[in-house]
Image 1 (tube, one colour):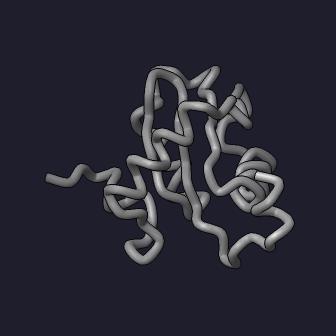
Image 2 (image 1 turned 30 degrees about the vertical axis):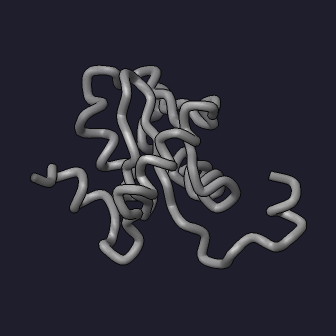
Length: 112
């Protein structure tokens, strides 16, 4: 059974497979939150920062500092507005994934 967040979060062509999701969740455990969603909410500057972070990292962890009660509705909204896929929502932390448009160069892959 699929939940609404599975189908609404990202276009089907961009959605990772189940095995990819497991691998992404494993990678996300080692990450520190890159962004914090604070008092300003889903403002234009925050969404631009999120787009840049997804462009650079593909997998981004976001801490919901001010909107803990609304986290279940904000997580899919964040994914939809950023064109990413909701990987997981654990506590007050959201993990989003957006596949890069172009594969990383050999120098980027070596530094990872």
